[in-house]
Length: 96
Image (cartoon, rainbow, N blue to C red; front, side, top):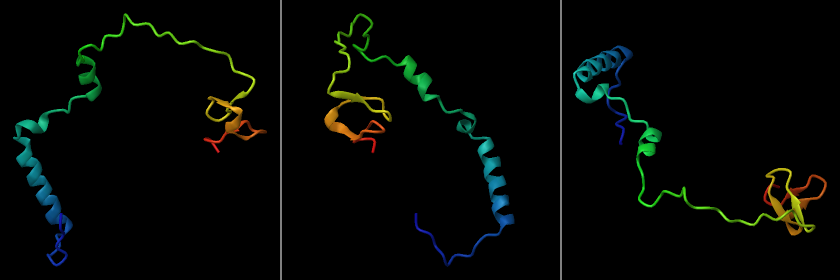
């Protein structure tokens, strides 16, 4: 939006009078009293087709940490030794 810097400026009294008039005009507006709908509540009631995964099972093999791996003390992810940036602090290259 362009601003006309040459236009006369309004003082605080003019601005407050306008805002009061605007509020009075909006008082009769039907939409002014509506409260916005909470998106989280609206999303809970919305169901995608095929989104029911209650009958599905997750089959992932979990292996213990290997000898050539380390746990980063910053992000707590297990990385290969080649990702080790600081051996004393045990921090990976991504966290440095």
